[in-house]
Image (cartoon, rainbow, N blue to C red; front, side, top):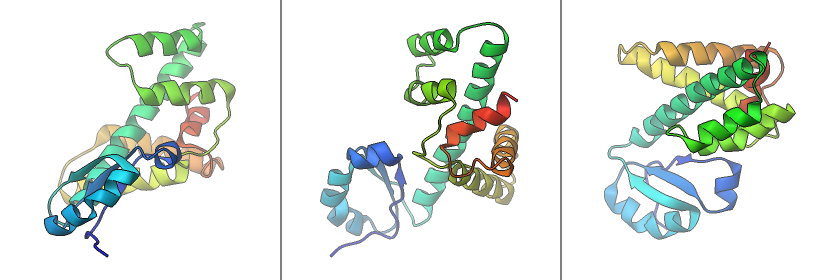
Length: 175
């Protein structure tokens, strides 16, 4: 059986069930090529990113962006509510413009209902933000937006929301 040095995935429970993961492989290219048929059954796209470690770093970067975006999205949802705007209208406007984003469409209704069944647990999102920030320190690259987002997720962890979906960070933002 062939293996690759690493093949983290991007995607949560739903994409895994539906074979829609994004495979972030790195290491030995020949092993990647051998494993590609299996990857194609698991995901919608398989990327070979180079030397061992590149897959893990890419996953950290992707999850850092996702966590930071969720923080900003939560602020928008909270501001809309406090400003007397319907959150459903905000979701519609976001979905119609340049910022249309499947994550907003998936997580917005959970935030409106204050129900967060875990697709990607908040504790894992915070861990990935922490690791991305550590990578930034190692590379001497300040990451102020990710730092602010990480603080939100740490507050949500302290509030006992670690096992809920990462969208539960909204409960910290709105309060």
